Amino acid sequence: MDDDKSMLEKATDAVSSAASATTDAAKSVAKKAKKAAKKVAKKVTPKKAKKAGKKSAKKAAKKAGKKSAKKAAKKKKKAKKSKR
Image 1 (cartoon, helix red, strand yellow):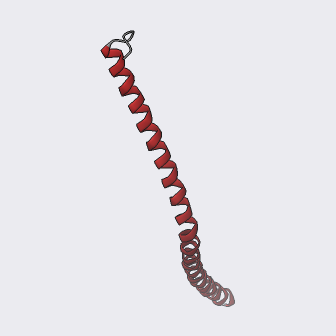
Image 2: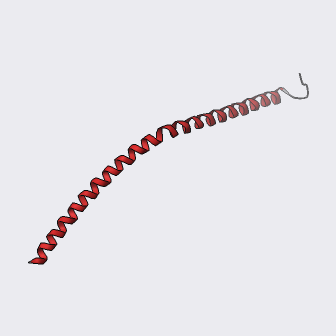
């Protein structure tokens, strides 16, 4: 054993080295999890995006159809009034 260091210093060193090892392990686990999540997202996202795109296109078409019908009705009304 090293007599130059007191028990307190030895304990402090041990705790700090354990803490840094734990931190490093946590960081590496987080990196791996992030990579895995990205891989999953790449596989899943295109399908969901495609579905969302189809839905929004349907909604947009529906809205456009309704708006154009309303505009046409308004134009007809105006045309009838102007003929009077």
